[in-house]
Image (cartoon, rainbow, N blue to C red):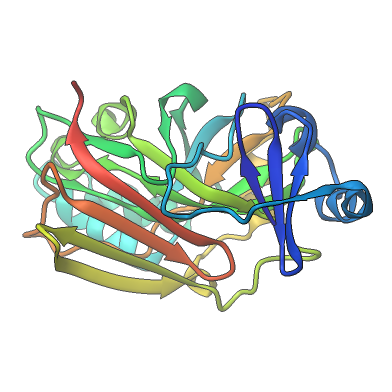
Length: 278
């Protein structure tokens, strides 16, 4: 099932059709056993028109913070080591990849997040910018993983590469994150062979394409959630990006007007246009 966020209600999409749920996002999603709860609502819901994926959609958040995990794929470890080699920070990434404790960091407040067909930003003080396609977990306030969405963790590789202590400036700014198009909810878990694909277009021409599978991630959802919740509470739940395994080549950098398309099997397509902050 797929759950879409609208200002006054939510829409639940199933193979049988689309249904309106008269509820705010926070009140609906923050619960354990979300799939079975939604399944129980279905007989009472009114059918509505199918979702138009060509139209802008709100991100699947309301009050939830967005956090992120880093260096969870081997490809990401290699990229971080290379970009930080001159600053002497490369060994940090090798250590965190094999460490018991994962890298976790705050990414965004919900009001700074772009949705499907929205704009993502690159920094004017950065010379090397990339999107990072990431499977993103919705974790309830009880610490249980209840759904999945597509995430784009926009990053300045030049700023982080200059010094790992500049991570917050490389990662946290207006529209540095995008989520969507929906929250996919499964009876058990997202299939482990689900593919994450990234395609970037410039002037309608493809300039990059790559993919990986979530089977390549080093850490489990339970492990990431447990560390995130150790000393921090999330009364409305939290979104957690799980790291990237698709990294464009070193000579590539995003430019204003580029279109970033991220697809994750069983969830959907997230499309964003790159721009500078106004």
